[in-house]
Length: 386
Ligand code: NI
Image (cartoon, rainbow, N blue to C red; front, side):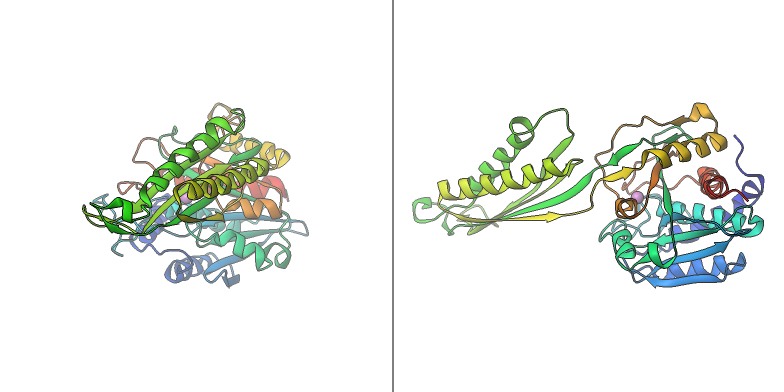
C-alpha cells in the first residue's frame, strides 16, 4: 500500500494534531480555536498565503506549485457535534457536550498532512487550494463559502473531499459517479386545536388524533405516491403534545426528515405533505401549518473527476481496495454545494471496525490518516503534474 513515505514518516505528528483537535471540539461556524490551530500548522509548513474568516471561521490556504497551471481544491470539514463523549480516551473532549463524533478532526488532520507534504515537495503545476470548512453538521458552511465567492476568488477549477467511514474495511476507498449522498429536507407540522379537560373531549378540539393521522398518512408518500426504483425516505422523527394525563392539549407538533436524489421526487413529497396536512386538518377541525425546510442538495460526483480520483486512490491503496460502484447513501453532506459550483468527487475511506459516525463512542482511527493524506496529495500531483 504505497502511502507516500514522507507522509508516513510524520504519522506521529498527525496523530498528535488529531488528538489535540479531538480534545478541543467546536460547533458550527464557531471554530475559532480550530482555525487558529490550522493556521499555526500551515505557517510551520512554510505556507503563508492563508485567507481566514471565510464563512466566519473557514480558511483557504494556497500552495504554489512549480509553474503555471490550474488550481485544485481539497476540502476538509472542521466542526464537531453536540454530543457528550463516551470514548473514555485520554484525548477525549475537554468541551463538555461537544464532540468530534464524525471524524472531522481526522479530515482536518489528513488535509494538514497533505499540505505539509505538498509544501515541502511542490511537485505539481499551478496551485493547490486547501479548504478548511466549518458548519458541515449544521448550517451548510460549504454553501456559505461558495456564496462568498471562494471558487472565483481563488480560481478553483475542481474539488475533492474524503470522509472516513467506520465499519468499512480499513484503507478501502468507496465512491461512485453521479449522486452519492442524498438531499436532506426537514418538515414541521404545527397543529392547533382547543384544549380542555381530558374527561370532556366533546368540549375540545383534540390535536392528537390529527397528529397521528398525519404521521400515518405521511407513510403512504413512499409506499403509494412514489416509484420504488428512485430512492426516497420520509421519516417522522418527533411527535410532541400534551403535559399530563387529564388535560387535552391545545397544540401538537410533528417533525421529521426527507431524503431524496431527484428534485421531481422532492417536489412531489412537498406537494403531498401539503395536501395531507390540509386535508387531515379540515377533517378533524384543527388548523395545521406545514413548514417544509429545504436543506442540503444531493451530493453529485462528476463522472470524469470520479474516474480520475478512483485512479489516484488505486495508486495509493491498490486496485483491489477501490470500489467505484458504492451504493447511494441516504445521509447528506454539504460538500454538495461545492460540487454544484465545480466538478469533482467525494469519496469514502474505510476506517475498519469501531463505533459508528455520530455515536458517543466514536473515535477517528488515526491509522487511516496517512492514507487519506496520501490520496489528497496525489490528487494534486496527478491532476497537475509538474
Ligand atoms: Ni461528517
